[in-house]
Length: 396
Image 1: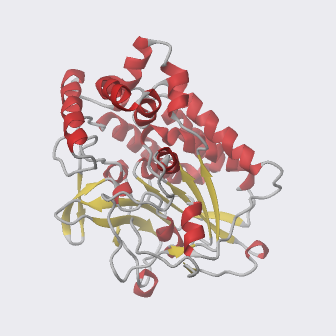
Image 2: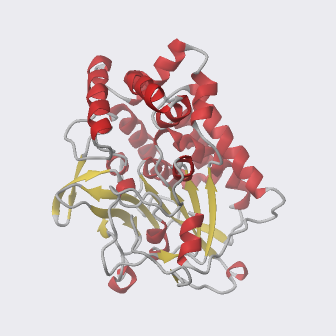
Image 3: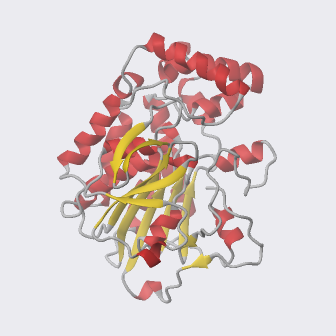
């Protein structure tokens, strides 16, 4: 979500809660999009488990965008058996991933669609509206629904008692794209709490894999998803086009501390091309004039510290057959990118879509080790507080 310009000294709008450590605290977990790199979020959560067993810190809402929404649904469905069990079930789902059990359809047709996408994107970059997509994620959707259903579903009465809200950020496709948050909550927010929100809210009794993949439907890569709302049927695409790190909804739904696990790699790309960290791509949905972003009193951010393309190269780069198996019909995109932009950039792009057991293992290990490094010497989770909107936004 592209924000309106802020003066550097101007405070962001925050929810002040004094003496958080002296009483029960509502924790929000926010997971960004980033394709196959979302296995990193599993490792980060594994590292955080010892710090979230304190009964005074309860996970009260889980909100995700794009593939982070899919991870969020699995985490939320399994949380009633404890965070450790929930993360373990997430890990099982990721470690079994391959192109064959994740996507359906003809590989040769996917190859041709990938070629068309390369030509189209090279002439005009950005997630443009499309009725066709390279991949059909039906097998993975069925797997995710199976995990959700086997754990009792995501109706508020069936999930962890502390979990007040579970939500996924999506984008309504149309002449003008708009953010839409699907929420399953114990109670609806009053209208004043949503004053200034940049997104609309659609309340549902329960969430399913279809909601998660509506959030992950990157145009031309995954197909758009149609869902019913109170205003009628809508066509939905990737939530990252609107808000890839949906912290503001977490605050509005009661989180006093927010844990962000960001696997977008945004800072790597901005540094690579010499752009400021507050730069936003033109295709992001801009914030409307009278909207504003709420920030939590305290935030903990876990994100990858380096290029994930290097992890992929280490896993599959020494074997041509393994590389082709890992990237599926997208290998021509890699070849073109390597020729035009260099090997490092090519691997970084393909790191968002590659599926390989060693690569997934490397991502989980990186998420765990890098988060442990951040947590080293901490007896309890240390959240940070930023006094201005700019410093807080830059931390994300």
